[in-house]
Image 1 (cartoon, rainbow, N blue to C red):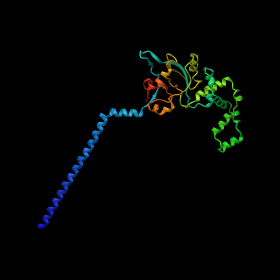
Image 2 (cartoon, rainbow, N blue to C red):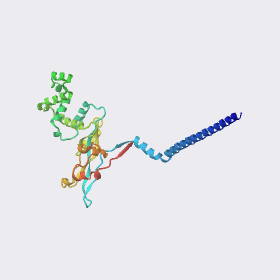
Image 3 (cartoon, one colour):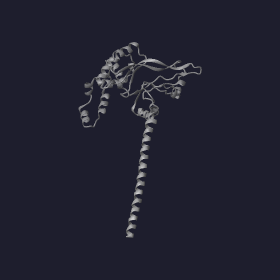
Image 4 (cartoon, one colour):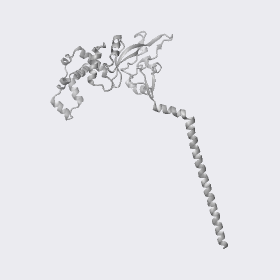
Length: 300
């Protein structure tokens, strides 16, 4: 009997000890859980109250789109007495940017129209450019320059489209080009200017020496001359002409843009491919000081 009572007491003690251990564990778990949730709540409050401006700025930077204006005029170069040696001169200019959905036929028609308005040095056109335009305006005739056998090779993939085109170029004779009228050759030169370089870039058609009449005619015929843009541009003005040019240096044109050999370094600094930069002597040496600051716009 005594032995049974002792056993019961032991069991009761063990049970009480076990319950106390369970309570202790539950208390620890509860404290840890409460501490964890308090930390989370404090972190949320910290981020929302103290760090909200920082993260709003980060969000703006990641969602806003920036566009930059045209190449800005460069800084002036002065002598030690503050007298201007190199400045900028405002010039009227005509550019072309290929519109969306424009066809080759459209561009040929526009080239003929603009060639009647602008006075350009059409003697600058190369024979290759004339031949390329000749193919465009005499498609059926130049198709006949290729033999049936050559067309068959094209179908059998023994010749490429580019090789067929080069055959046409090589078979156009000078007497064929002599059939072109003066207005054809003028249009050919304008068409070449409209399509040289990358298609998405603005092409320089006439930079400076644009008369008031030319400027007004292009501006008033925008609907017919789609893609043509009037601009008040700038060019470098050397006060003393060619004197000291070997010291002052030169600046690239928008058609030349940044030097190809230094393309990566210029692009890393935020330049565009068609930006005008110093390419020799002081203009090159002090590029970081002389370069203009472009306008910056935010697209929301």
